[in-house]
Each structure stands twice: as C-alpha cells, then as structure tokens.
Image 1 (cartoon, helix red, strand yellow):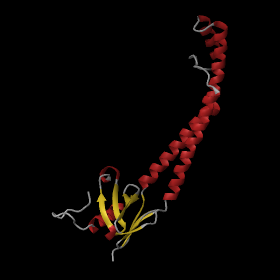
Image 2 (image 1 turned 90 degrees about the vertical axis):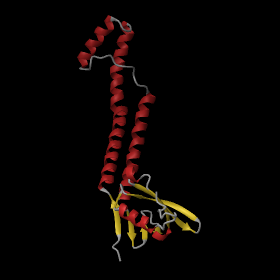
Image 3 (image 1 turned 60 degrees about the vertical axis):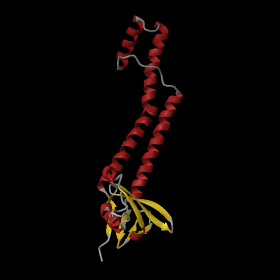
Length: 200
C-alpha cells in the first residue's frame, strides 16, 4: 500500500499572505495618519496662507513676501499650500483607513485558518481542505489550463449518478498537490479512440 500524500501549506503562500497583510496594515495606517494628523496639520498651514491672501490679495508680491516670512518663522516649507481639506475629506481618510484595516484583519484570519489545512491522498481517496472525500475512480475530467501559470488544476468528479461537481488542486498553496494531480490523471480511463486521456 502506498504511503499517504499530504500536501501542506507552502512557504511561498504564507510569505505572500504575510506581505499582503503588512501592506494593508501600512496602507490603512497611512490613511488614518492623514485623517488624524496630516490633514489637520495641513489645514493650519493653509489657514495662515488664506488669511494672508485675504489681507494682501491673491498672487501679489505682498502676499508672497508675507507668506515667505510666515513660513520661515514657523519652519514650514516655503511652497504655497493648496486649499484646506474639508470635514468630509478628513472623514473619508478615517473610513478608508478602517476599511483597509478590516481587509488586513480578514486576510490575517484567512491566513491563520488556512495553516492547518491539507490536501491528502490516502490510497485511492482524495481529502480536500474542506473535508470532501473524493475517490479517484469518481474523477471524470482534469483541466490543466491554469497549471503552468498559476499551479492550479480544475477537476470534475461524479458526486452522484449523472451529477458532476468541480474542485481544484492548488500546487502554489499546497506543496505536494502535483503528486495528487498525477494520481488523478492516472485514474482517468482513456475515452478517445486514440487512447487520449480526458484531461487537458
């Protein structure tokens, strides 16, 4: 009897999920920083400039001179600030930040939930990560159109007489899925006159 094939979560998939989660955390933090600190700080700067414009007029030598002095006194960059952010724009930054952090939390939850999952081949039965058990002799078709680029094979099996269901084998996420796919392909009986397998 052949030893079971156990395909476990790959290091590459785990590394990718970690990087994605960190990127989302950083992005969400950037939005929240802008809403809490960046935009209000800019509004103080813009407010001073707008007061000078009201006093000296827009794009006049006087306003340029007054702004240069005000910026130097407060140790600000001398470039003219753009208009102030309104309350809706600031609120949007908070909303975006929390939404992105929710995405990061969802990704982290999926990562932790996936760690113990496996795809197994015990004898002639494949056990999928969702718990479904599929006998090799129930597999009716194998498609490898996504295999070369993504490491994903699409398979169909007979769940009930005349009823086909699909599942995938993901060799990027599960190390060892290629061995299980090989066993699935071998189980397919030739159907074409020239002996071709129904896999593609």
